Image (cartoon, rainbow, N blue to C red):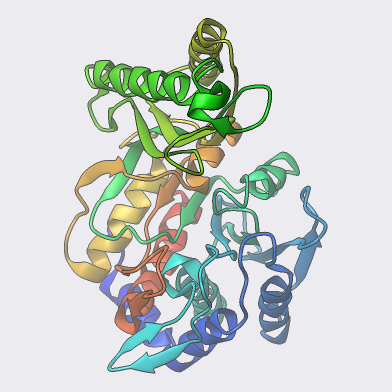
Length: 398
């Protein structure tokens, strides 16, 4: 059943732009590089308490910055929609918030403090209008998201502690399509080393095991394997692969180094087994290291598993209905290009998770920016999605 025009207009009218921007600014003005989000988490908790919401704080495996958990219940049975976001930012120079010509700037405004402010505003609007007549909203916010400084474990801690809804919305900066599938991803770090000290090439360098030769072969084999994996595809998610983005060794041109370092990623498809992929990677390192007489230590840090959700999911239907009501268009189906916490909710908790946020720019740079109009739009879409999803009307569970 389509959302009524009256409901859509009531939600839009109830979104208070100044309040939304003040919330976003209050979060952005507190620096919160990954592993240091305690102060901004406490600020978010204060904002919610000042608004009259009950707030819970839970370690979820990271006592340095307990997660923020807040519920709004309609008082009637229905589904629970979860709005989830990360409060930490990448480790770049801090940029304070500012507003110019309808744009909000500052560290984390795109990724994803602006989105968190939007879902806080959506929840306020639902309470103030009384339009959420069944079910409930669960808001969660946490640290430890951004790689390589975080490992995603606090989001996993939230899931394992039971802080989950029946469907999850995540306001990452995807606005133009609906990602129904995505690849799993692990960051790769390889350290190839030999015994002894660095030496001049003619004073023993030629005789030493060559870490550059071994490391170069590892890089080449990963690149070749990546080319092979391009034929391993998914109709939405794309193809699997390896990517090598960093190599480094040596201090000077004619010195035999003792270490070679490589960095990259491995991506895989929904349904692939990440344990088998890790074993293949580690076996390759061991084979090459043994042949060259060196040691190769490889890290395989999983950021998220591959996932796929049904286009017939009630959450997908609710998001499409809300987006259509606000924007007049239906979102095309696509693949999530990155890994976010939605991968964890689908894979670990078995619940649908949709990434949809403001059309923002500059994520993972010092030039983040988001149109204030986009934050207003997201607040409306989230509120309307909650109304549609929590009611469960004409939406059987998938």
